[in-house]
Image (cartoon, rainbow, N blue to C red; front, side, top):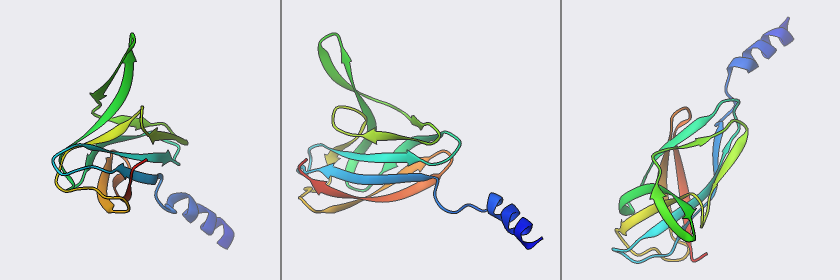
Length: 135
């Protein structure tokens, strides 16, 4: 009977975050200019989740972007949200999804640590620290 109760409780108790954010880093940059934030999101749940916002006090404006190719031209455009499918991952990296940090409030030097909050529809707020590096 005790084993049955333990099994029942374990089904309904969360053992941790379903969304993990790993390997967060930011490009070096100068105050007043732009930089970018990169990371990997793992969705370890059976349901999709949506990243819809990123905030920090490091820049005046923060937007999620994607890089695209049209004909022979490359460009960037803002995306309002990104869906992370169940049991999968999405990587924010140069030449793909990234978070633009526009009009930096201060210089970003190698090894600085910058705090960000990522907002997910299901997971809620996820606080991360990103390390500044040149590449």
